[in-house]
Image (cartoon, rainbow, N blue to C red; front, side, top):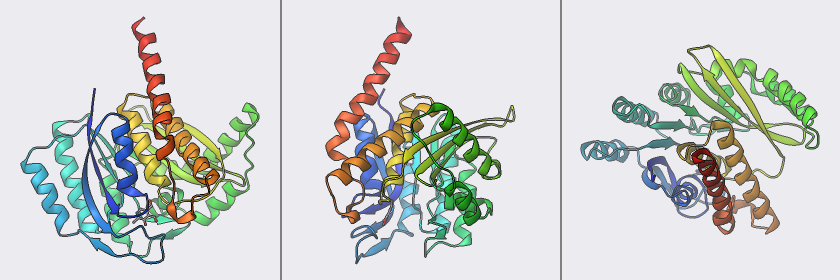
Length: 315
Ligand code: PXL
């Protein structure tokens, strides 16, 4: 069944990232995207020059109208929110909808930092408020830097510890061994990042010596147990838009009914395919990640797998 989702993120007129990279994925899954824009930019900030309009005063009015019109969603995905008061406004808006529909999937990417540093306009107030927004999220997807700022854990120490680990694709046993080491290294972080009784956290961008790991931690607060899974890819290139793309793929795969480990593998696999394609075709670095020419084939593979699963279930 077709789902209706809300994307809350910024909009770059030129250069694929944030909301313009997310809408086509929602459509490709056969779902309907509604958009609430936090900032409008002439182009993304990876280019030499940009013009940015923060829609700080507009955003609460947009949410008011959405509320007055009684719009309902099956899922809400949030990304960059440049204004700390609006992080709280969005929290209140989502909390109201959750009261009516507990099953609505809420995924929050607390966009505020990367490579060990806060983005220049981000403050402690943003972090404090992102934590409040995370309290009502089913899934949170901070990168390693953001996870460290949100928990007060030392980033450099973790980065060095993980950066000494060598990822070898070939042997299952070696992968299991390296998974254990990564999970051990970020154990405290996984415990501290959870702000809701039952929550799923995805810690992205954990760089090893030669690979990048995404950790999926499914925490069941009723039983006090967690299931932690690592996804490894070979280190390629850091390009803008990969985080937004990963988020929306995981989100859509979850709405489609995949279990969370499958969602992780689907999102990571797609992003990796897109990154390889972008690099092979020699798109300039500033263009970010290009996936349009491989979109249909990749989504067909995902949807075919679902069909097979459904046929099996019905037989
Ligand atoms: O996803 C990265 C991103 C999002 N939004 C804006 C950006 C970038 C990366 O450059 O500039 C405005």
